[in-house]
Length: 346
Image 1: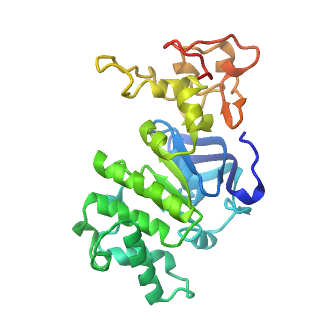
Image 2: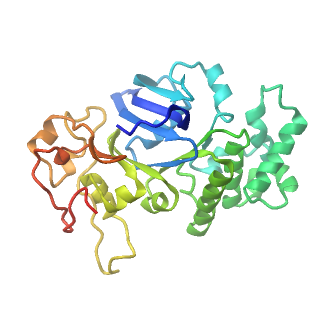
């Protein structure tokens, strides 16, 4: 578990979140006992390979996963002290956009092609009589300017197909920010963009976070994005949190074999161009029938007998840094990573 923060600093508190889906093949245990907190003004990254449960976790916060077939098995999601899990769809409408914004993965499919851009940004104000049409338009145009779209008044009246991919993503950010929410959830918002536009969008999010003081939960599979943007990181695998810590902890004091595998499966500037990348051998666990032990055990070269038999608790490594790995048990044998580094040390 994470260190407890002063209550007034914590915007979001997720405890033992467990979410599953009914399917024709059985029940998929998509998220299994995930816990974390988000403080005011910080950027928390959630990283992991496809299917690890990071997007489902993000969508649970706003109850965007369809119920049914999805359902909460256990856990609590508290925003500013209020329980989210038990809220009705009507109650959630007051939170979506105004309290918590969401930037979806693909702006090409997330924007309605039949609606003008301005009207889509203003949707968050529908059903809110305290915001007049004139005020909604003023705030939409103001937000278009804030996210760096030139000639905002003209863009306000255009349709999505008249905008470039980068502009569409800026519109998505404007839509998420227009209600001035306390938290923005960004679910791989740069996936469909080229690297130049991606860099611009990341710089924009960082700038807006500083100017507006908004907290951000950033979902990605890209460790480079995590390094550039985030303050703290959760590493997810098989529906569970494997490791948590600051960006420096995750990159320089890696405490879990899965995190170590991720770090060495992507290109890096500090290794020779002739060095082959090291893929993580094997396949992710079957979430129809999750393993009794650590979900990574079958792919882990350091796995011990206990790893297959029991799920590891989170072992604290140092302040704010923890790893759900039996190798961190006081009685476990010392381990050196295959590259010569020691697990959990700089």
